[in-house]
Length: 110
Figure: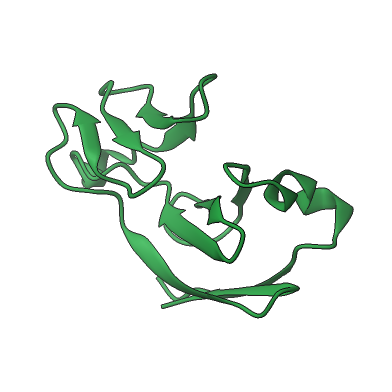
């Protein structure tokens, strides 16, 4: 799936991304995109499609701790800091899209 998104971090709709560890969801990718602010200058964009039985269409959401992305169907859990599985049945990480940040605009692409 082709992804080419420009996100303006000054847009009030994306205010959660103004703080380190903030996240938001975007349309795009396979089942949506999870954008996580890892540091002041680094973002990670994951496809929300769970890596376990991807053909089933499972997708992840961030849990209340803000540390894990959880698939409500298969119960797989992934660290939002790098997308690696924390609890199975998933053994593969979430798909990461490329990103570039110029201080105001975040470009997410593949």
